[in-house]
Length: 78
Image (cartoon, rainbow, N blue to C red; front, top):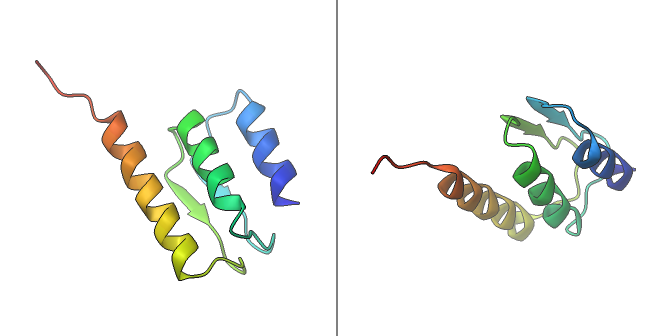
């Protein structure tokens, strides 16, 4: 089910602040999908992943990806 939620969110013109994926059993393949949504939706400030199936490796991949996105979005004054 998380696949449809993320696809719909990515295609939506909305600017969500919180993405709740609780109880959707997000797996390791969801990390890339979550990062793709975050790239398209910089308004997101929080992702709720309660009851996901992500292990330490996937959480590390997700946090590293979020860090990269934050660095990419930093605008430096000349």
